[in-house]
Figure 1 (tube, one colour):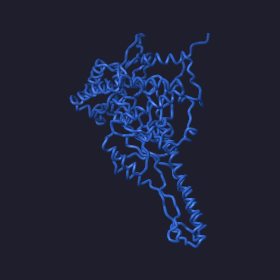
Figure 2: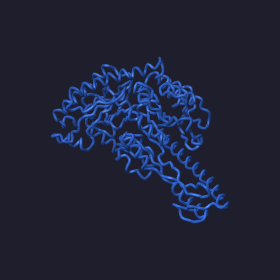
Figure 3: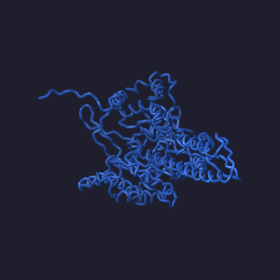
Length: 515
């Protein structure tokens, strides 16, 4: 027999080592509702209350029995998972269901075309790609109009019209046209720009990472994709950002026997992208009034709006679309995470029919997107939310209110430790005061290093069997995204664990927290 050899860690070993150092390198062997299960040193099973919920992926809970039964039926029936480039009526059924919900919640009669994807980051990249394709085609249409005007100007020159070349060089019509075309070729190649509110997070792929505000994620890859301008959600700031990107194309106009060089707008900003509830920025619900004023500025400039509902959608806020609470209807809407029912990888990008470019379907395809397995499970997950007149939405709102009330009671009692509580429905965050100046060296060091939330998470897992993580770009904020099945008892367990954490913070006992 071959001797037993310890296998070196090859699956992201640095990440595992980092998690292990914080007491978070735990293997989970089973999951159910809002619980994950691990084995202790003796092999006994230990239940862990999971409040991370797959970062918003388990609105129906882990291994929901209704979804699992449906999933098994798909596998037992030999559902054709790999049948690309064929008819997928179940995909159209899901698209219609999503449109029905959208019309109800966002008050529109316009249909949205649906492109299928595998993840939230890919769904957002579908949106930004389509928006950029739309921008490029608009530039092409503008250049075609310029060519028509050139033809008219050349005819006018032949009939005796004079040429005013300013601001281009040349004295004859041929010289002016040559200079105009050269300048327009250069200007038309201007790189696109995206706009987003400060704190945004939209994925970590080559394109979407540039739409993510956290500079540490984005900087190493800044040369790979179109850039994003991050700004406050204020109409004046948005208007200034748009003005800063203003560019023009040259055109010709015949006016009273004189051929003049004129300028016309060149679209540079492809889209404005936002989350109705910013997840990684610390669970921040956007302000509806500010958003409405910003939308007026964007509409006046003809700039499309992408609404990222990857984490906030699928009923988590108490409505299917969190944007419905803000009165916001995007030109693009992206969904993922809980769309897969906690089992499959499913995502969609919804695009207003009036702006949809049909050729996009030939330019963006995906091996697994729109397959029978993930799409049918997505339909099941959506149908379960819609069942009984939307009982799941009401439950999300009621459970979320209960959780939020508990967190707010901690803030009121321990205002010296808890800075703020934010959220909507089952997407909430608890922010701690900055501990960078703590007299405890461990607390100060962890806070300065941006790791304080992960240290808190390690303590809660180790001492209270609670799984909680901080938000990625605001690590002093702990996130709570359980399923609609979270119980009063589990909320009470959460409170008990947080009270233990707060007590050690008040005592300045970093050693006990770090374990």
